[in-house]
Amino acid sequence: MPETNFQQTQEAFARHLRDPDRYPAPEGIEPRRLAIYRRLFFNNVANLLAKGFPVLRGLLEAAAWQQLVRDFYRDHGSETPYFPQLAAEFVRYLADERQAQSGDPPFLAELAHYERVETELVYADAARPSDVDPAGDLMTHVPVFSAAARLLAYEYPVHRIGRDFQPEQPGEVPTYLLAYRTDEERVRFAELNPLGARLLWRVVEMPATGDEQIRRVAADFGLEATGDLVVSGRQLLEHYRELGAIDGARPLSADA
Image 1 (spheres, rainbow, N blue to C red):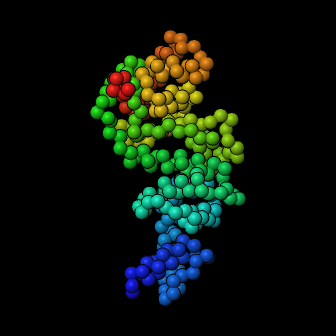
Image 2 (image 1 turned 180 degrees about the vertical axis):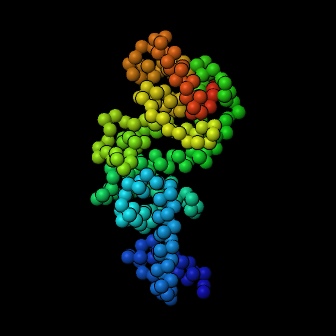
């Protein structure tokens, strides 16, 4: 078979597997075999996603889950050739491409993102930069956020969602979470108040000494940077370092 014809047949076969209602199968393939291929490919994707998103899968009835996976399987053009990366593609599909369907939980995309973070952190490269001192002074030096941590913000309290709690509306205030990997290689989540979340956001996005960060956060909230507040801020930075969310500190000159 000429290469061009083979490629055309291969593309037609792939289109049929993804959307058999719209695209006919290539000629010459036994219907029974086609049915086996369709089940095999779809079930592999459905099973992979079910393992990657156990909370979401547990909330949906079997038919609703099957339809959600089928919509993704049919409509999303994945950017990766690697099967294990399909979970990240699924999150991208829910956040950026899927139009809300009847029966979709309003927190669908956020819950999927939250569940995916755990897997990302399990495999994150957490090598500490060479210029970061793990015992460095967080107040006079620049605190450095760990590559094995994530600062998260959601409209819904995704960490509480389950069979017995499925909110219909976003929370009155955003939900801020810190996800981090411990020394025992376990992923943990901690809920943050707005002040703590703002402090970590500044550490991630606007590097400065810890003392300066605390004073800037105080200004963000219209607070006076009293001695007690600065002490509380330092304790908070040290707490994040103990958790593993802050790697340590680097000299100010190295960050400039």
